[in-house]
Length: 403
Image 1 (spheres, rainbow, N blue to C red):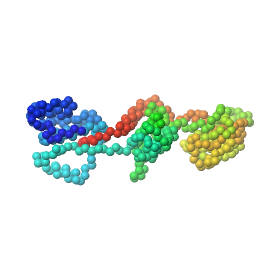
Image 2: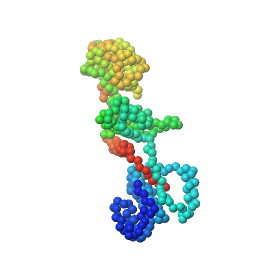
Image 3: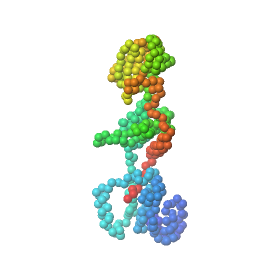
Image 4: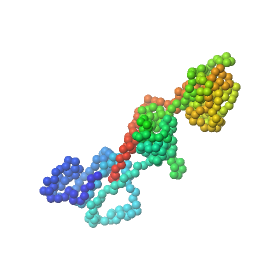
């Protein structure tokens, strides 16, 4: 900030002539003019000062106002953000009264002041929507201490589908930088937020996420900055198997010899091999039937369900109505029911219609970006990169308010 007080360029002509001209002095040229004219000077035209806003619009940015009196002050501020971001202060009743009094006072009668006419300055506080900093204890605690909304914290965890340990002990150098926005209000004093972008450094690894609504997917999905879908596959392999002993589709039954449709895929594995939930959901049924033997059905929402049959045992906490997590133990491989050997009969159903489990296991929750959507995605990533970088620098400078 440069401040020129009254009389700062006054003095005798000889004294001014002996003063060296500083190339970086923004008022050097004006001082020379004042010396030549041997008197005070004024600006004939308003001068636009350099700032982050390089617009040619004369109404933007701090300016040197045209001055009528030799007693004047100039306040100059360099703002690293665009000047329109700096909101003017809200006038109070006292301010309005002072303004009225000044308006009624003739210019010639105004008391001389070193800051007469100086533009008011203030430091704009950062608004909600960005949080960044070091991770001290763990990521969840740091986000909470940074006043990040709870639903955004949950979205951070969901974006990486549990692959980022929210409560793992932090290491030196771990950092977070998240950007979020308001999407809807919920009642008078609450709001719903969406995670827009995140950049995490955890245990030496960098994780990025950006929300992008591709054509045909208005609800949006999360991708890495290089365009890879963040969401994992819809279903995880439920068992460590030795081989696929029977495919989905038409087959000859190994026991009856009847040619019929096989509604699942058989994964051969030793008896007792753990069987895990292929996705999070709710246990719909635990039963024993002649063909399936001992089996479990889990509902996953969106019309999807999975069935695990021929189990030798079912986990004690697995019962109808219980919630299960992805990868949670459901039971163990066996050969109950009609089976020639130990294996897991695994079915995936969509709207209660069996589909090929092998195909379903390859399906991602988020599709790859189409080539036509790549330019728009690249532009989105560029914007959030700038936003996150500016937040990490955290440069806030006092800015003059435009009248």
